[in-house]
Length: 308
Image (tube, rainbow, N blue to C red; front, side):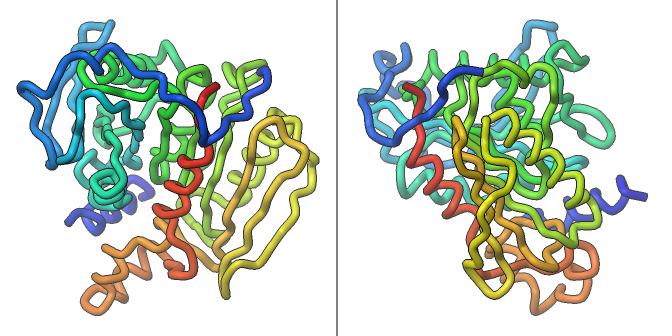
């Protein structure tokens, strides 16, 4: 039943050492900064493939902004889709493409395998999706001018769980993560790894990914980050409370949408669709807040953090 519900959602959304990172600092340019723009398609999402170490040919999408300059290192955003969804659906949902064009960034949308499509959260799983992400970063850094100190992960639902897993397994490569509607804490290999700043979003009435489970996982991250166990809470909207953990080795925040469902806060595509699909969307997804914009707040968080 849950798989069918998530598939319906996918259809609707179509159309540990010191880790403190700072927004200022010199870029760490990759090998691709010397390769020029020959053969690149700029200003539109392109369908790409990559062969991973296990011999699988994997599909993904890539966006390079129209004003790309091969001598100027750009940040990279890994944006992962939910269970049963697709790279295209996540691209339409998150709004990262539009921000990347405006502000300058490369965005990668991987495609999970299986029916329904599901991300494997631990290195060495079959298929090894952590190895896929590592390979995507290697290829992107080799072909494009990437600032290796500004690589970030985000995602919706199971994509949020996957971004959490990336923060554990690839903690020396990812500067910060923003999971939406899903936070995981894979105990192995998180324990003992570098601390990664996290800004998360979740609705407390989400009936697909349990809010209680997310709270438990955020608390595990708080222990991992060395935070004070009780966060401070600030109301920042009529239906949004911002929880900030203090005393951490790396920032940890959770935006709680009161009576919020399983969705991307401030998602304009769904909000625009409400006049025609209001009943169907609200039944399936639950309440969508307009008091915060997860995309804008994610970008703000990315701006604050880089690997030192």
